[in-house]
Length: 123
Length: 123
Image 1 (cartoon, each protein chain N blue to C red):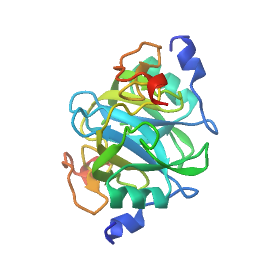
Image 2: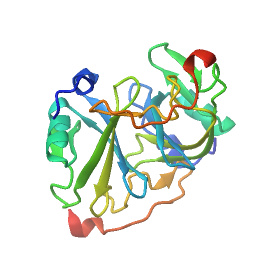
Image 3: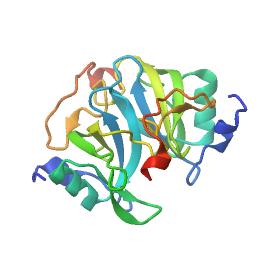
Image 4: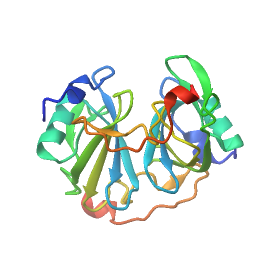
């Protein structure tokens, strides 16, 4: 990772920063997760998205099990420097349910997303 | 708000749910904030985005001061039902700094966003 001040000034809350992942091509919002500093550093260095799993309390290389890696094209931050936005090339689908995006339903329960793989074949 | 089960099953953590706001037309991610239940209900009912300001500890109707309202076209949720994604029509700019999107810089410090108003004229 570069030593620019912006990277070093990013604000982690209880060691974590929220990360939004957007498909660089379709511009769909694919998922939302958290990163700790190590996950962000690994993401910036390897250009493959890494997160911190709060439930498993462990570093998580997205796609490790499924092969559905996220190749990172750009990392943006917001005005307050307390959120990051990853623009990625998504292999397969981002969602463990088989949908391309985790945001595949409206809050009224209507399915709007596209299923791209069968979760049972992958996990 | 409708009484669908999905709305009622949304998961709030310490009373809050993360909300990503995306421009329905340009597909830019505009901002990230939190909602409490009341903010989500008001958003769904009025179709104008409301949030919970953690710093001010108060309900916040986006655009109240600036007139830069977010007219909500659709509200999506993710597989875990613990994040919401608002697709909006953004009046003016989403960011208090004058940029169209809060995500106007890369973490390397490069400005990539577009300035659409002068913050000093608005606030």
